Length: 223
Image (cartoon, rainbow, N blue to C red):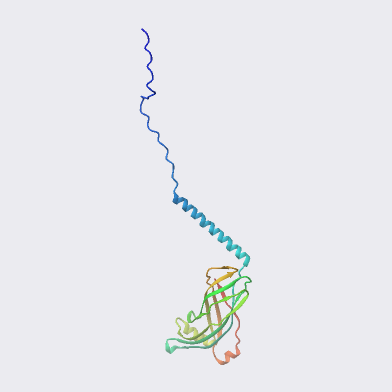
């Protein structure tokens, strides 16, 4: 008996177990927000570094020096405390204060200036002074005048009685201001320096005013 002929292939069809479908791998999506935040952070850091380098270069070029302030003259013509009227102080104080800009390449805009007169930690006088621009290596005179009446609080009456006997009054004059520095075409933001001047003035009597010359006083400058 002859062997049976092999059957012909059935058009390449596959009759085995089913093959699972091919899964296409998903691409990871990058967060647009994360990239934008990273770029923004890099930009901010770069700007800070550039501004810091520019500020350092300007400082090395111009080398700013501190303002020099002196009380050139001060006159106290009235300083009377009346205990009968709630420690009312009658006063008349005038000063000439020199403000020196020692810088060769830096000008100063004084945009706001206020002056205070203080006795034994009690403020008794206040005045706003005119604004001005101060050029290179220039000296300007500030001339505040305090003349009115005010009430002294705290231990001022006791201090007043002691210093009246001694013949001298210790008065503090402070200046608060807002300034801008100008170097070439560049201007800084507002800086707020403070001048603190302590003067020792003779009691306002005819004899002391004539015999006691005022001694020039250097003021503390703080930024």
